Length: 195
Image 1 (cartoon, rainbow, N blue to C red):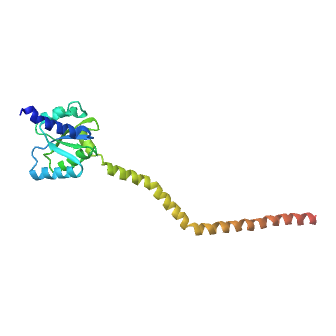
Image 2 (image 1 turned 60 degrees about the vertical axis):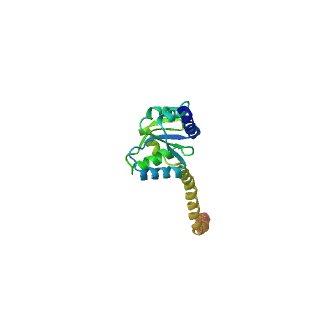
Image 3 (image 1 turned 90 degrees about the vertical axis):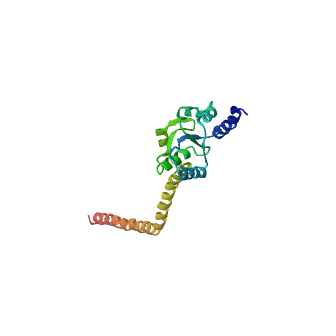
């Protein structure tokens, strides 16, 4: 069997993995211990991210004609790729967090939703919260005004007994004010008769 025939299935596998991917991150994994690599793979797998080590030439062939072709310049030395089809920021976020405990792990570059980012750009992407976190923040901000309105209405309802008595007292007060207003009219009438 020729070498090309052996490589074709690998190139096809990579191409299939990246076909509908929202993001692909290229990582330099040199210096990771087996335990660190296993822990990283577990975290990525739990987040639905595919993480594999391929030869650079194989990745180059698979990336041709796709949005991920921009990664060809960083495919030097040992490289692994993390591919996510659901959460575009998940690979960068998980790898960057893991790199804090394993400093030898480096993000080389990545493509997120069709845009190429270098290592610094991927650090910025890593700081973007996950989709679930963003949705929960949105839901919280939508619920906040409703919750505040409910509290205000509840306070008004609780004070309703006191405010219902106050208008009754105010209604009696104008009647008391009208009586003195009639008294000066009677005085004027009494003064006219006296003259």
